[in-house]
Each structure stands twice: as structure tokens, then as C-alpha cells.
Length: 236
Image (cartoon, rainbow, N blue to C red; front, top):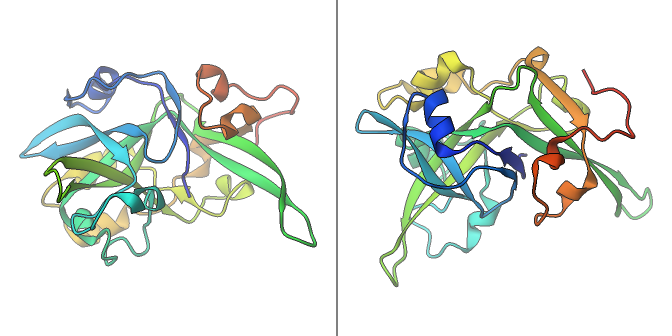
């Protein structure tokens, strides 16, 4: 599961990192991207790599309406190739969603009722400070009433590595820079794509507790990514 992430870099900054052209003016400084929010993603169209804007939560082309988008913010890597909602995008509409971090929560529950008593948020990011490159899928949906085109995206998830497993049982698929071309390539073989859907090495990541302010989707600002000082050392 990836239900919240930080995307503070501008389209121009991401274009430089991913050797692309910025096709969006979506502002950076976004530290608490939530489902149905706009996001920036990297994709290839007709041989050109661009950074463009999407809404988070994939709406398949055949959907009657856009109401299900909030439920399709993630696609399971194990089934995306065959799932009716994602298989067309897996074949030809792949993208990379850059993020400086993603958030996960550990939850304490009442033993008798199962009710959540407390949720503690953690940030997961790269040790070297470079952006994470989530494997994503995108789709175009046309509103039957207005003919408006809606561009949406989802993030692929898979089993966690040993580090992320300390806070959650799923994690985004994080692509190595050497695999960007293959993932975005319009002619990449399906078998080669499947080989990229693996947990990122744990030694390149760090996990640490952050402020409960991130629990509120209206919270924003770079302080959301600061380590929570009342805790001790990051999980390594």
C-alpha cells in the first residue's frame, strides 16, 4: 500500500533528473499528496520523455464514471498485467511517479474489538536524498457527458523488503535508475517488465517516525518530513 507521499520537486526539477521535458506547471513543495490529488509523473509519448500532470487514482477507459478513482491509487504488481482495470495500461501506458518519500503507519488496535487506538506515521526515503522512482500506470478517461478527458495514474506495489516490513506489509515498486528506460520504453517485452517488479534493496532506504500531523490530509509543509525528535534513532 502507498496511500500518501511527498513530491516537493517542481516539474522542471524532475525533468532535469529524468532527462525529460516539463509539460506541466504544477507547483512543487507538496509534502502530503493524498488520493485524488494531482501528481507529476514521467512518461514517454511518441519517443519523447515528458513530465506531466495526472490525478492520483486510476480511472480505466471503460469506467462509467470517475467515482472509483480513490480505490485505485495502487495496483498490485502481482496481478496488474492481467487485471481488467490495469492490463491495458500495463501494456502501453506505464509511467514513473517520483517522490522524495512515502508514508506508512503502524497501528495499535484494541485486542477485543480490533478498533484502531493509535496510528504512528513513518517516512520512507532514500539514504542519498535522491527521489524515489515509483513504477506507475496511467490512463485516459473521457467523460461521456462532457467529453472532458481525465488523465489519471496509479502506483504499483509489491511485497516489502526487510526494512519496510517493520512498518507495513506492502511497499511501492521502486525502480533503479538503470531500469527507467526499460519501464518507460514503448517496445519493452512483457517478461522484461515483470522482472522489474521486485522489492527495492533495503540498504538504500531509511525509515523514521514523523509527526502525526501527516495523518491529516490538509497538513502541508516540509516539516512533515522531519524526524520526530521524541523518538530515538531511525530504523536501519
